[in-house]
Structure formats: structure tokens, C-alpha cells
Image (cartoon, rainbow, N blue to C red):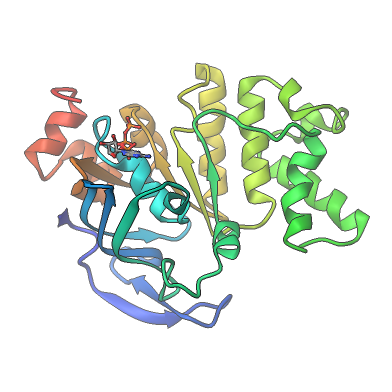
Length: 281
Ligand SMILES: Nc1ncnc2c1ncn2[C@@H]1O[C@H](COP(=O)(O)OP(=O)(O)OP(=O)(O)O)[C@@H](O)[C@H]1O
């Protein structure tokens, strides 16, 4: 891996939330959110990830780019153990949050998926009301008990997702009655309602029109003040616009990981340069 970022000097600190050690990259001034070391993954006999190493920083947007089938979504799913739901998957290596490997047997998967939320390519609201789409998970996780707290959380999440003004008068209509772009913002509201640390987004705008896409990109910029965002995108302009860091995947490896400005203006590897300039992929 040609990483300018991951190899820089790290110092240890303690997470206020968990009391566990966290790592800070003094050179870039960012705290570490997820530290991935020597991560490999096989689907049956097929190896889809090869010794992936990356440090993902808190309250930044990290974009994963690379040609189709290079392992971006597979990698994303490793961060909240969504690959556990797929048969015949074998994983080696470490995915650490607050110093703990998410794959360790004692890790509570439900709690992990609360900390690491996910937004998919195709908006997938539950077949329930707009209100319930947002209120359901916080209730399940016992984050709210009083009705007033629940109402407040729903409003705050919808506001933070930039959807409140459009839906405040029809909270009891089905989530599926909204437009595609609105449904995706509803899914973002649902993800942030449980106050995760990290939000994974797998091509969150590829099913949307340009205006809805721009709205979601603006939203990502706002949300990174509160959350760490890791997003997969095929859209190079989008990566350049929204991401602070970009990782270029090829054939299951990270070939280059850098701050986005450097990645797009002065890539350090020929493969990344060829991909970014549209010579392949
Ligand atoms: N559920 C699965 N079972 C078996 N193989 C899989 C599965 N999901 C992905 N793969 C394989 O793993 C490799 C990486 O796929 P992955 O979907 O992670 O790539 P990607 O970079 O996200 O692709 P795209 O940009 O097309 O979405 C591919 O060879 C793919 O065929």
C-alpha cells in the first residue's frame, strides 16, 4: 500500500465515550475511527480482499473508489460485519474500533451495527410510516422511552437529514410514498437516529437524479461534523467533491490511499492515475 496517511506518526489517547485507547494522527490532526490491518476475505475459494491496511479518520468522509468487482462493497461490509450474513465467507486480519477487533467472538453484533450504520445504493425504507422508519431502531435499542423524547429524536434526525420541512405534515404516511431522493434521506435519518459513530454508504446516490445527488452530497458535508462517513462511489467528481480521504482499490487490494486533493491532483501510483483519468475501469 502506498499510503502517505496511514504510516504517519500516531499517538495514543483515550476515547471519552468508551474509555478505550484511540489513536491520533498528529500530522493530520485527526483521531482514528477504524484501524484495519492485514484484512483478507474469501468467498469460498475466491479471495476478494488481500491484506488491506487502512486508518479511517473520525469526522471525515473517506471515499472508496476503484473498478467494478475490486472489493469496495466487500470491504465496506467488513466494517460492520455485514459479511457474516453471507455463506462461506472467511475473514483474516483485524478491523479495530477503540482498540477492539470487531470480529472478536465477544463482540455484540447488534451493538456494533448500532455504532456503524449503513445506507445502501437503493433507498430501502421499511414498509412503515415516515415516523416509524426513524423511531423504530432507537426504541429497539432503548435509546428513548418517553413519547416526547421519541418525537424529539425523530424531528432532530429528520432535520439533520435535511428532510424535516418536506415531511413534517405527513409523518404518518408510508416512507415508500416519498420520492427516491427523499427516501434516501429518510434512510439517512434512520441511520443517524441511533447516533452511530460511523455511517457506511454504498453508492448512496447512484439511483438518484442530479438534484437529489447534490442534496445528498451537501448533506454528507454537514453530517461529517458529527459522524465518520465511509462511502463507495463510481463517480470520480463526487469523490473529489465530498471526500477528505480517498482509497483506490484494485483486484482486492488498496493500491493507494491519500488525502483526496493529492489523490486527484498528484496520484502516486500509475494505476490510480489511469483509473482517475478514465483510462480503465
Ligand atoms: N456474496 C458474494 N458471494 C461470492 N462472491 C462475491 C459476493 N459478493 C461479491 N463477490 C465477489 O467479490 C469480488 C468483489 O466484489 P465487490 O462487490 O466487493 O466489488 P465492488 O468493488 O464493490 O464492485 P462494484 O463496484 O461492481 O459494486 C467480486 O469478484 C465479486 O464477484
